[in-house]
Image (cartoon, rainbow, N blue to C red; front, side, top):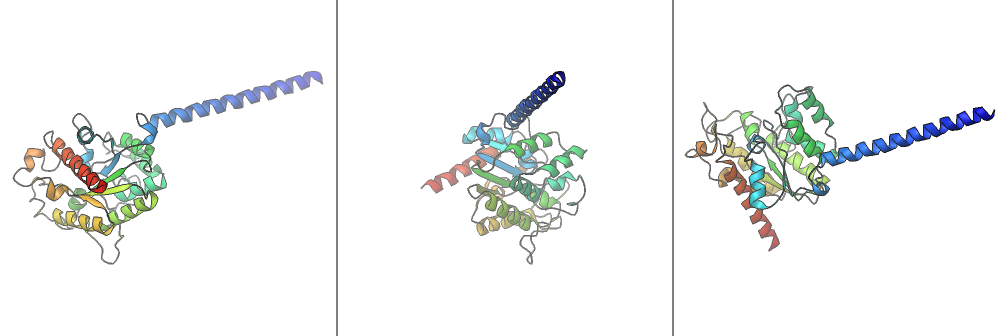
Length: 292
């Protein structure tokens, strides 16, 4: 009987040690995972988080827009822009593993506000066409704390334009299948979830896609690009937001677009610092105006 009690005590002691070891390991992994997600970010804080398309998101090597922006502004920027995405959702929105739709502004706004990027992660894991940087950027965005960010830039419009997405739906201003509805839906969701976050809209940049007319003449089904820019400014006024008007303000036009871009749309090395400087200067102007 005494031997049986000793064996039971020994088994109980071993079980306790195993449980304790498991808890220690789990705690270590959790802490390590947390640190990896937020590597280099003090308390998960970013001065500026940008959601957008390939105009900002495409270049990830040397001389990127976010590197120039940080140099010019002195602010930190999380570049969470994904090439190819729209503000609105399209006809493939419910198609399994169609990552372009789960990375639309509407779906990213839901993920960021509900703190659940499961759909995006599943889509990218299954995608055969994603860009190399997509998964890393998604991890950064999922690990960011928008409640601690100061500014959220929303830079969309070019892909909605080229995809022929409708500008607006007069009968449903929150129709996410339209450019205007998508912007309103996302802005409203961000404002409700993060009331202290300053949201700034950024109009699309002038472009001239090869083999087509310039963006003031070519209509892919939803209107010319200036109409998307104009609508974005109207929506900014509706929601009391500031807007950085790249389309009309940066100085890109038919006479010089190829000096700044390599294909009429995507910025070359000469164009990226110009774009970044424009963003930095406008944000500084807005900050100075509000401090008066």
